[in-house]
Image 1 (tube, one colour):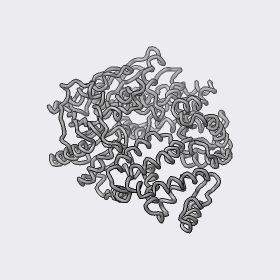
Image 2 (tube, one colour):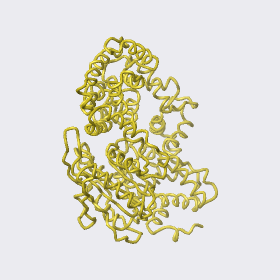
Image 3 (cartoon, rainbow, N blue to C red):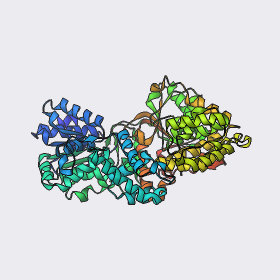
Length: 632
């Protein structure tokens, strides 16, 4: 028998041993959520529950595997019969068994992302979209839009109007494309990743007898990270739990930060209404952070109206060191301050990998990456590629490379492949012709891009002029305005974020006297040695950092318009999600926390004045030390 009294704290024990029924466990950051959920499964088995009657839904295969492995160490028999895994894994098991009831062959194929893109390409060809001059999303962008509509369970037309207004004129064609894509999948007896859930939900809704069978089978529904569920995922588990109502959802509303990919905080906030008579339990004992960090984190989230209020309580003893709010003259000074502090922490014996620099958006880390490279401080980009290695930055740089060196075949190929109807063979043919004529205007491109080609020829001639080659920032602006803005909006659902990155490239370029100098620096920055990156400081967006922790955390660019972002403050819900993002950032720190902001940031038009983030103003002055960094 497991010793629950000594292995769990009082709040964890209350959740683990709770009587069956609808239960929402609000688990604060660092409170042992995974431990509580693991012991809940063990407790059910320990009390005679048939493991095959337990349904455990998680967000990652790793989380499910680790949880079930821990359960098997506590109860070393029968755990293999538990239905545990990601939402998509569990939906797949159900759909595979009953595919014929929703019109699929039981041997249906699951399309991965590349398979889906290939099938959608056939739909584009049938609709002649590949030869269209219309402002229309490319394959990857269309798949993101279709997936978001599926997860939010909203009509495609409504989603486009709300989230993608730049495609409003193409709504009818997108609806037609989505319908054709569905038909093609049906004909191929195939489902994509989103269909696994949506078709399983449809199966359970349309087959009441089958739904009742599974409700009877799964007497205990457990859901991890409930704050991150989409409407579709919440409906999936609700269909299984709505009969007996024996569901335990575990999550933290204060860490709901993924609405942009379909997560809906209302699933958690309305749990008591969806399950009348449900019990609300809290895990508030925090094992991660110092009392000083937790006091600030509690204050940081207090202003949110839509939440389950709670105060994280520290288990650790005080370090008598408050978090620091650091004002820097400029973004470059901010980078210099962080670099100097990193070197000091390393001298104190804190390994690089125990330190993180977190930011709201990838482009916020531009100056930090440059300064750490100059200072030879090893770092790892946890949130993806280094700033200048991102595809959209390299796309725009290709225009400049070709302006400087008309013999650059790699840059030429990168540009021409952005045009509709141009693949590898066509690009080779166009390059051969350009090599002979050295005049874009005299080349005969595919009819699908004739008008766009003519505009590019004029643009390329303009940016190759001696005047603009001495003004690389102006060159980049012309490329964006004349061509790339339209291209990226049609290609990517996250176009706004990519354009923000490009605006920072413009500011960066303004520091260089000519295009050759800029391109040389970009090449050096993208070829930095990474041999020690695994032992380096972690640079990450806050979204990527959720669930992780470090001894020391720097949160940078805490200025209004940057964090919170300008767009987010246009609505109360948007601002509250930004505040939750700030809360997540602060609760990643174990021992030390630095909250840093610049008062000015350079742009192509000069230095922009910045105000400290409104989130900093909401924190009582006595909870932090106020520092002012010198100009870097």
